[in-house]
Length: 184
Image (cartoon, rainbow, N blue to C red; front, top):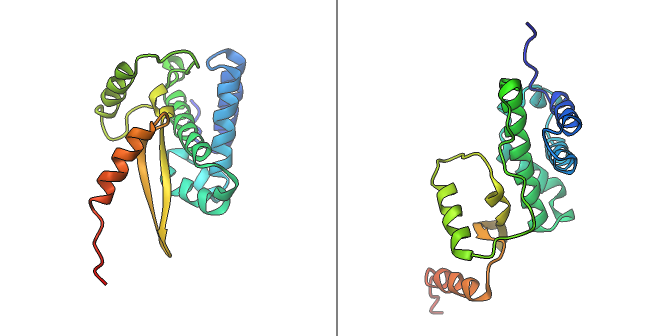
């Protein structure tokens, strides 16, 4: 019995094989592999020997610091979502190849026409726990970094990708209520 391999090289072989065997659509497999390789490239070789131990948020922050200006915020969030799903699928496969099922539903560009159903599904997805398996709703939320002043950038997270102007105004009004009034 051979020891299980959770390395970055093994992840790359997994996505190539998953595309060949039809476990994942070729484009899906390649986009996840690409995202994982771009983001994980900031890590040392020793850190990529066992991808189960990678702190994805820390790696992503390092990636943003080094190369984030080359990407739009939406693109960065897609990369983060893809690398999370890539690692989830990869570890799941290595743990149990015979029982492997992709962690996420492959999204199609058709639907959702009913916004109420979509937001209900998103709430249910978020309620499953602190690190639920990713599904197609993960692609519908973005994190927006906002530089406030020198040395201070905040992140507004969980914004729907289809945020309306009315919703943005509502969020702005709520944030404005927290401002400290300067009398000077």
